[in-house]
Image (tube, rainbow, N blue to C red):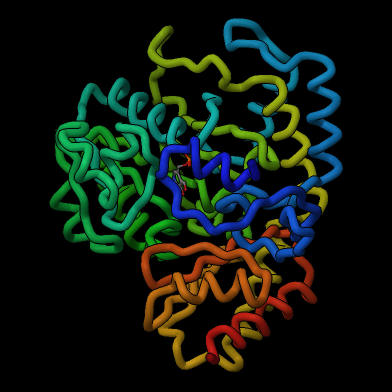
Length: 383
Ligand SMILES: Cc1ncc(COP(=O)(O)O)c(C=O)c1O
């Protein structure tokens, strides 16, 4: 049976499938089992910031796999220590300690637990249209997908993004944490206003709550700086990371300020911080620094916007972009355009809500590839 037949037979039907079997990738390109080449602007949902099969990441994984793959947190390992040091050096000031896990939702789970432990409270406040993951804690602070799973964590409140008045009303003495994305990804590539984020920071400080910033999708140079927080001069108490952190190897991380408490035995993870993922992350982050990918994302993102907006198709309502995190909001459903992009133009892209085309290309994409993307979008949106 083909890969497609096997998965259709055995996999639980939770993913909307695209009908493409991917077999290999290199840089910004991937190939399917028929040898068709695609420009990958989905990047494993914003994971492959360095593109595919990056030699530095591949070498780090190969070398580490031959030495030691697993080493739980009860033992020390040099690549884990070095990665923690690197993350703290890169993080906004005040974030001093690290918990390593395996995914974005795990990072959010951990951050919620640390916030509850530190404050002795259980209330959580987050934004409508936000997305923080699919496990039960992360789902509790995710407005969209929770209905079928209620009751979830008690006392979760949701406010409209960028409504500081509603935020002020929602944060009180029962609030353990406010959790926000600096730019909502799944919710449609919607940036939070700097004023709204500083209001969240102020309210948390005044009312004894912690501010959790979820940089799972925005982190690791995607938005034109190492973290989106850097452009906002925002100092969270906890920051959640994953996706691009380890060049495609599953990993998540929580960075915490010195006031955050995580007592002995209060949390843990068998695979969290395993040497394989740490070696991949060190290689990925070093490449981001040497290749100056943050600056590249800022420059190339502006290049894309200038080209695309020079002849904006009438079917586009709005373009929202920070670095190479791009949302094209249509006046119609995005799915037919995504299908046409894949089938006619061999470009892989993502939805974000029903009407937004989300583009998360590798940060090493070339100007020529972006020109090709712009021309393809214009063809697909012109018809
Ligand atoms: C902002 C944000 N937080 C959390 C998550 C959950 O990450 P994961 O799918 O690795 O569990 C995502 C995934 O898209 C995300 O975009």
